[in-house]
Amino acid sequence: MENKTVAILDKLEETSEEYWNISHQTGNFISMLIKSSGRRNVLELGTSNGYSTLWISDALQYTNGHLTTIEFWEKRQCLAREYIKNCGLSEYVTFKIGQAYDIIMDELQNEQYDMVFIDANKQEYLRFFEAVHPILKRGGIILADNITSHAEKVKPFVNAITEHKEYQSQILDLPDGLLMAYKL
Ligand SMILES: C[S@@+](CC[C@H](N)C(=O)[O-])C[C@H]1O[C@@H](n2cnc3c(N)ncnc32)[C@H](O)[C@@H]1O
Image (cartoon, rainbow, N blue to C red; front, side, top):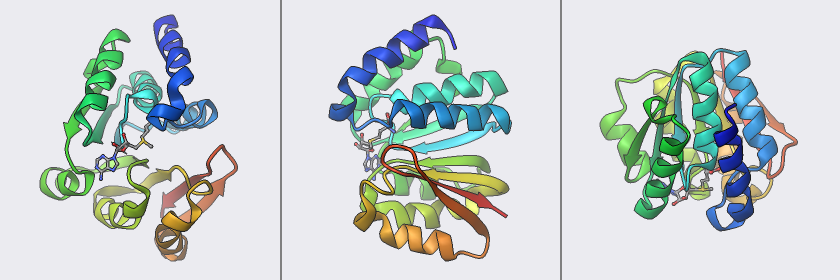
């Protein structure tokens, strides 16, 4: 990772509560997962100010992949664009502005992802899952944050994915709880 990216990640960690960012440990884990399994086409729901986007796009620079990230809060997405640009990672990221579910249904139906990271509105996790299931390749991975911190809100999603015959899943003991599900 470039020094500039490390410095910006460090700076963003000072405001992580305000922007609801994933933890450093979670970012590091996702980065290692992308690099070690050669993930190349990733979708992120919930960009915020781009903290997780930086971790993911930096890893995709390593695998020569690409990230599409969705956020409906324009101000936050502007910040994310700026940080990604400052780190020289713009060519690895496509930003989309709007409701994640609508964008998936209207614009991404012809895509095939090998990883989806769900970190937007917790109450919508189930419908996000239903929307991304058809555009996730076999061998693809779904990651979802806030599984233990927002356990009640994400319960319908957790039940659906853990009972789903096409997925093998595990909740990982990272801050806030990260669910990882492998599409068989
Ligand atoms: C937990 S934060 C994302 C944090 C980011 N992944 C990170 O770790 O840096 C969730 C973000 O999703 C956005 N969001 C929530 N529901 C959304 C939806 N239905 N469509 C698009 N964006 C949404 C919020 O505005 C917020 O910025």
